[in-house]
Image (cartoon, rainbow, N blue to C red):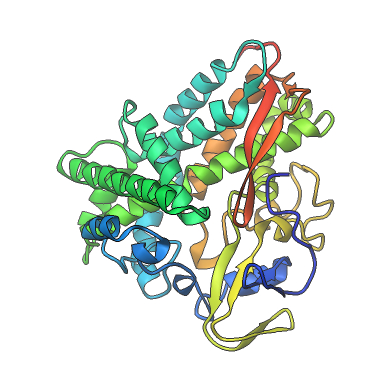
Length: 397
C-alpha cells in the first residue's frame, strides 16, 4: 500500500544508517516521543532557514522579506513559541465553524465526483483526490474559486522542496513556487484584514486583532501557509491510499457503499491505515531512552505512523478496515501531543464528504484491470501517483 506500513512493526527503536535516525514503530514508544516535547524537540528537527532548505540565495532573500527566518511554525516549534501560535489556530477549527463549511466542501466533492462518470479508465488520484484536497482547504481559507487551481499548482510544486531530493534547476522552480504561494497568502491576509468574509483567513485576522498581544503579520502568513500545506497533500494521500485498499480488498468497497451510516468510523480507519503523515521527526534534547533503547542527545528520532497505527497490542486485526473498532482514535494519523493536528476536524470533514460522494455515485467502482496503480516515491513515503479505476454505472447522489 502507499503508506509506510512496510517498516517493521513491534520492534524496539532501531537506528537506520541510511536515514540517520532512530526508527520508532511501536505505539507506546511513539506516545513517549511525541508526548514529551521538552525532551524531544520539534524545531531542532527542521531546517532553520530557507537556504538550509535548499532555496537559491536570491529567492531565499525574497522569502525572508515576507516571513523572516526563525518565524515559528506550528509543526516545527517548541514551547514557549508553540504556545503563542496554537491557541489562536485552535480557535479557528471549532466544530461549529468547520460544520459551517460543509456545504462548500460537499459541493466541491460532488462536482468532482460527477465529472468522473463515463467509461474508464479514470485516474482517481489525478482527477479527484488531488484537486479535491487542495481546493477544499484553499476555498475554506478564502482563496477565490478562480484562483484555486493556480494556487493548488503552486502548493504542489512548493511541497517538493520539503520532501523530495531535487537537482538545482528543480530546486529553483520549487522555491519560486514557494515564493509565489507565500505572496498569495500575504495578499489574502491583507485583503481579509481590510474586508473580512466568512472564511478562515478572515477569522484568523479577526481573532488575532482581539488578542492582548497580537501575532505579527509574518506569523499570520506562516499560519496560513501551514494550513495550506497541511490540508492538501496529506488528505490526497489518505484518499488515494485508502481507496486503493478498499478497491483491492474483495467486497470492501461495496460493503462501505451499503452502510453509509458507518462513514464516520470508516474515516477514522482511513486516517489510521493511510496516514498522510510522512515520518514524524524529533531530536533528543538530552541523553534518554525510548522503550529500553538508549538515545543520545542530538540524535534524530523518526516516528513512523504506518507501523505505529498497526501495533497489534493497540489495534487488533490491524491490517483490516474495521469500522467501529474500540479505541479507534488512539491512532497517530493526526499526530499526538501538543502537535496534534489543529485542522483534524476539517480533515475528517473532507474525507467524509469525499468518500460519501464517491460511494453514493459509484457503488460498483473497481480497479482498472491493467496496471491500475503507479507509485511516486519520496523520502519517508511511497505515495500513489496513479490510481486507475472503472467507476461503473453512476447511481443517484
